Image (cartoon, rainbow, N blue to C red):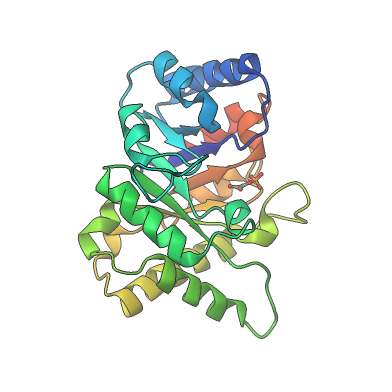
Length: 251
Ligand code: PGA
């Protein structure tokens, strides 16, 4: 089964040269492995990467965010329509690092609708902040999912990727990644909520990626499960020592 490898370069690289080097390595690994790769550099680099990108059916350009309005007086925001014009195909929305800066479920929902309207595939991040023994975190996640995916039709889910990203597992301060079993359970839980609450009946249309401290050592343990459609990788996506292993795992 084809697995996605989405590489969120965040704001890790601060020179054009470093981004170019990383992109060249990703391009070479993509060519070699033919893994469906979504490269998400920081916004100022999108145009340059778009120009350097070889045309290949397995290589996609992603943005790390987009605004929900197409145009107007919105200083600092990025128009989804402009992204489309730049040959961007995917957009990460609702990342926990943006939610931590105040983004609400409602705003994430508007961004999903704006992406779909502009024929961009949103990679929608959901995940609980922490876990508790009583399992209340499941209710937190349920509410987040219901509000995040409000007013979408079943057929739209084939143009959406969902990333299950438990906040406690993200970044270098995380004590651990989720276990593959936890990730599978949560992928099933997300699918169940979409089915029960939002009427998404055809489970084939729902693709759930896992993200949170994925690296070359644990990547294969996630993607070997049929319920995990791929990976959303943060810091390992700018590490030349990690990238070959990530591609090998998703092959
Ligand atoms: P990480 O980030 O791989 O650095 O934990 C994952 C993410 O935020 O998507």
